[in-house]
Length: 158
Image (cartoon, rainbow, N blue to C red; front, side, top):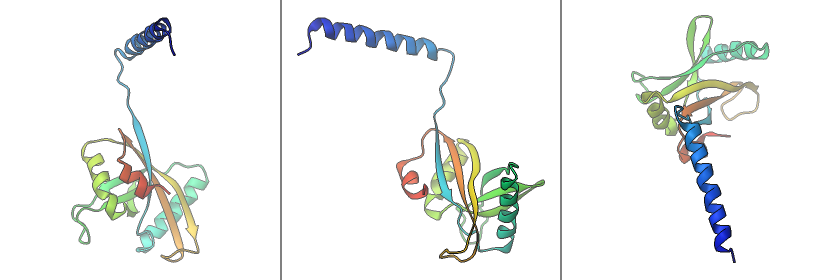
């Protein structure tokens, strides 16, 4: 059984910690970030996606940064809710694949609220054994301000 004195000492210590935390937070706003890794789908659907991923992989292997972004495609004839992954080679932004359809709503919301903080390749690899066939495949990390919903982590990270 905990004595009343021990409880009071514990309460005093907790109060002191809360006061110190409040003082250190004054004038600064803490930003929480969360990262999810998405499969980049459709990479083998177009030859230009394969050429772009090969060029991106070659640059990444040399230690050269390859900028990546998410881009809403409202005019996409297959899916008006599609979100493309694009990378920048030279000055051009080129599509390399898409966010999985079941996750586009979450990514669109993050884009619409300006909560996407960073997008980058986790990896770009050549795969010879895949359901989709030979080719380059990619995984993309998307960091947002706040937290991705549980469903995103459950369906995206691999």
